[in-house]
Length: 496
Image 1 (cartoon, rainbow, N blue to C red):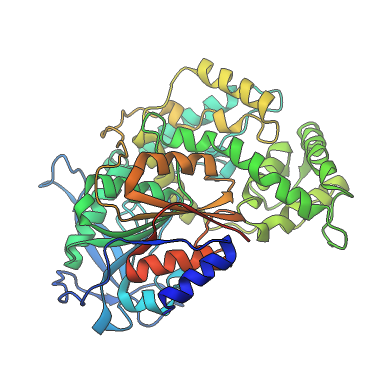
Image 2: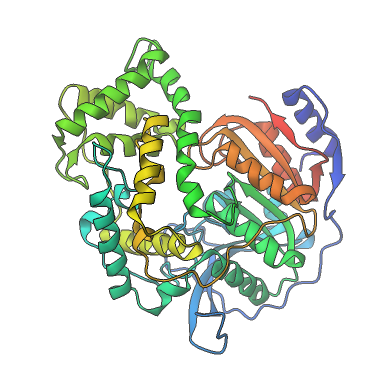
């Protein structure tokens, strides 16, 4: 484990200053071994760390009727690698909605430094609705499984009539095929499930590392169960605005793309880059906009893709997906280069329809159940028109009508207001340029948490910060907090 002096030296070297430390839940003697009610068995998936084991936790389907029907939430574990210094359990909260961390103890959990793997059992889970937990399926048409349907793009002329038709069709399929569980999948339900997981593990308190949507889950859990939390890391943070919730996250792509696209433009115009698309960064944006408009008018057939043609909106969706990480920049550049010559690369591989059905159902139901969405098409038309004018790269998608515009069920839970009430045990880590969870939204969570949190901002591009960028200052700050409970006593910025 890095010593305190060495950790401070790293921060000073990268930041140009020494970051004073304060104590938050300091390390102490190992607590007694927890008394767990779980029956651990070998996990069903292949290719996992042989130490990983799985169990199932029974939770109420409807917390308003806790004595009623129970559903299963499947969890996983790799125990502490040094039981003598074990502190507790570190829950890996997945993004999404629709993401799972069930395999993460074997995956990204093994990237954690030894000091953290010694201190914690690493815990993953498949949130309610997501297989192998009790699962849901909307039985959507194959075409409606395309990402561009869940995040809907307006027609080339900006009209949204077809988007409203799609929303009604998808909502009706979920009602018809989803069963009773689709009404009980929400962030509040997931937070309550997490506390049932904590109890089943026999832990008095739970540490967590939540990423993307998992930051909102972690914030809601910390608000509802503040004294059940130990050390909480929230990575790539969602705006917690309770009046908008996921509506605000969709709208945030406007800002996220504007923050991140210049990095792609610089990369895509670098001399010597085999995927170079322009001679200068200034040329890349107008080139992209012209190409998208051309493909709106003259799509290129793309056998094997979903949909099976490359139109302007598929190019825009590829751009959005590619800005999640600089490692994806080549895929966008190659698509641009091919499309300019009237061709397409091989169709991207996609998960099976069955897997997509399950993930899409959980994503849609969570988003629609968390907050009430407007029903009148006129409100979406106005938002799309403004968005297209102000943010042409995203062409109105972030203000458009998704399935929730036709969702028939009102939210069962009021959105949770995130406040500064509770223990000061939260560390936020955030990239400066993030297409999905932009810094401006992360600052809203930072402000809401007040003195409960300290924020580490990393000069990097992409979605996911901790252990994702190779930034020693950011990574060491988070690792040191998880291992020792010590945080910087003020917000810090980690340079390249």
